[in-house]
Length: 525
Image (cartoon, rainbow, N blue to C red; front, side):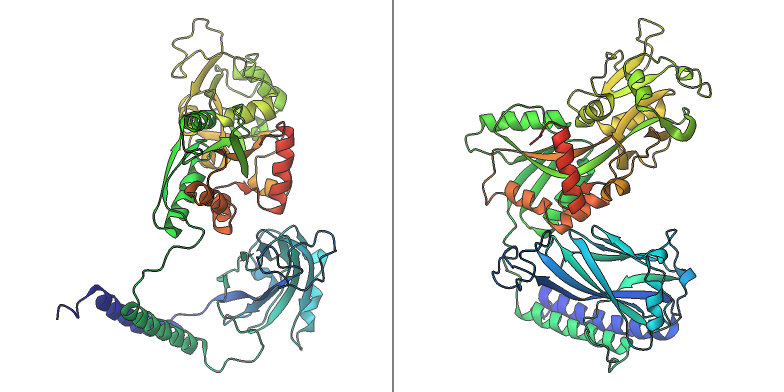
């Protein structure tokens, strides 16, 4: 009896019961729950063209594009888009505000050409694939028109891409009124009608998976080694407080995939983190300490043994207490420079519509990369007003007409203080400042801070910078630090970076803008 109640048997029985219950629920759902309008999509082909060196398998690809410019790592993707719901979809069922209806995103790749195909009897669909209907592409983004689809109708897009590996992330973005857009997991590549209904197929797959899981749990124990790219040990991520939410997400993702890795996030400011890394490296007898320091912009530390790796682009914003509302929620760059030179002491001096209250400059300390990017890209110089207050209040000012300025240790402290003090202005990474009560984000010269604009190559808004990851010398190839740096270049990490409102330097547009910003920053490592 005790042997029967072993952990493996209990889990196996629970898995079998779960499979039966799930199958019953699927049948009930199929018969009782009303169907909605649905657009499904699936990738029916994602094949390499050209050489196979990047994948580590020479001569796998045909050499059709080896000599063509900009066609390294070329791939062909066949994307099928279908109405798999129970109702027809009209062009006005698409809910997006743009002219087109759906958007296909090929992460890490650049679109070079698109061909549209459709089954016989649906030639009318081709009339919708025109530039006037929004059909077009740029970089890795394909805009798909509002194509009306009867129940069971579909069309296919054959897309030629370059600059990335096969099996990269492909997403279809858009909305359908009273319905949904969703990926289809079926791998059926032909047009033959299925032998069994969808419910029967799902039930069969579910029961098969349960039987396989049952046999696996009973017969095989999980003693497989971790993936080759994983490493164990301890690692500290330090530096930028603005980039700290990304670091926490990356650490959690890595620890989830790689058992035995212990990653600590200790954000304390860009310069403080890099300087601490340099000190630890100089004292270490083992070469490269298990520390990676992240900096908003290139580090000012002159230690030649520090090695920088560009990771992402971060967009920053000026924020004011919401009692200050400049016309159009914008300031000119010249207005900002006058404020931080101490030439404007009361808000009414900028515009007659603003309240007649003192200006309070809430700054970051000298270790802040956010402050250094602000001084470099907006002020074109230093913040000239000296620090006059420890807690950002005017009580300890000796001159009544002087501008109050304080320096705080973190982005969170700046945002909390600006929201609390009337007349306060500060700066922050855009994502963590968005939607905060008591704050108003400002445009500069009428240009809004926008990650989306930057990701499409629009760099007209000036206050953004490259995020750097620094190590002391190059870490050993089998170390957790080296493995984590490799993890930063993978698709899962780039999804985390994007999800936190940053542009990865690994994308085509991101790489170009990161290079341009590095040159503007003086060729930062």
